Amino acid sequence: METSVIHEGYDSKDMLGSLTTPLFQTSTFTFESAEQGERRFAGDEDGYIYTRLGNPTVTVLEERIAALENGERGLAFGSGMAAVSAILIALTKANDHVLCSSGLYGCTFGLLTMMKEKYNITHDFSTMETEDDVRAHIKPETVCIYVETPINPTMKLIDLEMVARVAKEYGIPVVVDNTFASPYLQKPLDLGCDVVVHSATKYIGGHGDVIAGLAVGKKEFLDEVAMTTLKDIGGVMAPFDAWLLLRGLKTLPVRMDRHCDNAEEIFKRLKDHPNVANVYYPNDVTHSDYPIMKKQMRRGGGVISFEIIGTKKDAQGFLNNLDFLKIAVSLGDAETLIEHPATMTHAVVPEEFQQHMGITDQLIRLSVGLEAWQDIWADLEQALDKISVSSDAYSKVLESR
Ligand code: LCS
Image (cartoon, rainbow, N blue to C red):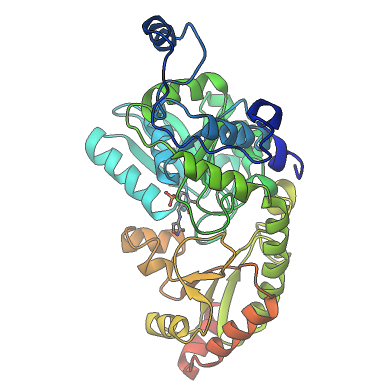
């Protein structure tokens, strides 16, 4: 993997010896003759036509991500949501049904709500804790199982091998949003799932300077997506963004290991802080999902969620008291980013669903960056220490334990 992130899909011999992938910053490609243009459009001759249909810089990234996820074909999109919507729209038609993990990124939830309102494509949520949980929600009209793991923002895990096994019995494809793990920590296609999607904005880019999406799966299906919901809806990736992602990807394994090292240190300390009620992190031996993390993830990743003891106002006060850590949505960047899911990333999710997904007013999501963990902890600790918790709030937490 450490070699593939640097070399896969590119040979400098083909590009005048250029060590890094050249940036083909062009919207269109010229034909040598009218007949050649006809042959290219007819698919009788390989070659580029127009960047919405393909671009050499973007192609290198697509080949690289396909190799990293052990898939047949990769496709690049203008954002993670462009990837998610292109895949979901390609798999569904009016009156179909999608079965989802019991937590989803806010905009994915928003997309499914819109698909229901406009096309009666319905969806249900399942914890997918057991085979029976999955089976109980499969309907004759179910055409797709859509899973996030780890789930944004609660960090709950889903056993992908189990879900894929049940889905196969019914002939239903499983789509996995692998954004939180990245291909370095988890490879859903190896576990029997059918399609992987990414917000490449996060760990794949890794530097907070690109909005982008990727999808990987079987060639036949992604060829169809390339010619329909990618090409015709048009959410394509810009060549410069592909170039930035190729640059970011080269350090994915190194960065991920450091994100994990730092997160493990912060996790231990958050658990012991008196003003923290619960901490959610996949690499937690006491968590019921720990066996799933051991089964399918290399390490626990860089995101931790935790509930402070107090109210929404206390949670916001805690964020405001941070010194150098940045209050921002997104994750997977060099900078540590911290946010309040209930009022930010998951604000579009109605309150009753937020409760159902485990998103409380006290929940904070922390994307642990690449700074020295001692500095990250020092800032978190001083802001946590400032939360003045009433004895009433403490006793409520103790009761709920
Ligand atoms: N899937 C997951 C799991 C995500 O977390 C996000 C974005 C997307 C898809 C969409 O990707 P985008 O279009 O933004 O590239 N998640 C965000 C978050 O948690 N904070 O800000 C954006």
